[in-house]
Image (cartoon, rainbow, N blue to C red; front, side, top):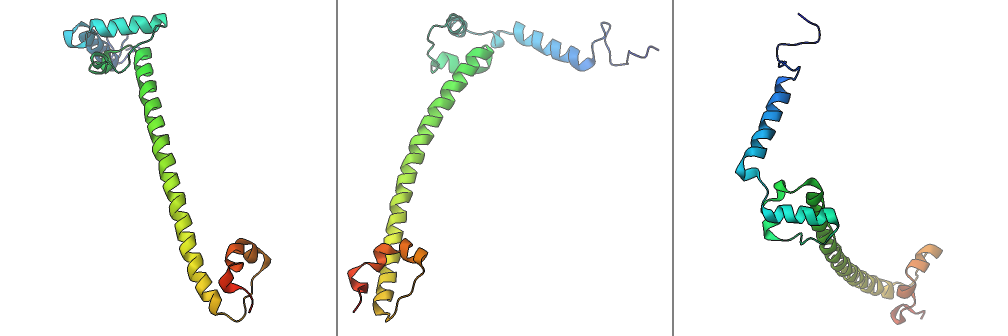
Length: 145
């Protein structure tokens, strides 16, 4: 027995898994269900020539796995670009809403602190604390008496 051969090798030195893979691919290529439509071939040709392609065309999307790899990549890039745009828009709206809520919370906290400080006889603060709460310390209800 030769060192390089194994029991799963074919006559041409091909392993069983490679032969099965080749057999599956040739079956797919010969099968009518794996044959790209005229629209898919036209889109692939247009893409190769640099012409614009309608990537949202239903005939392309129904046969997405039959598209040549460059066309699939273009479709995927189009989809991700649209999704990123939509997500960026949604994120911007959510950030604006969060900012409004944060301001409202800060206002509510300041009003409760202001009520507490208005009753105090002495208010002490570090310079950092005073700088952070300047608007609270300068309000009319906490003015020195």
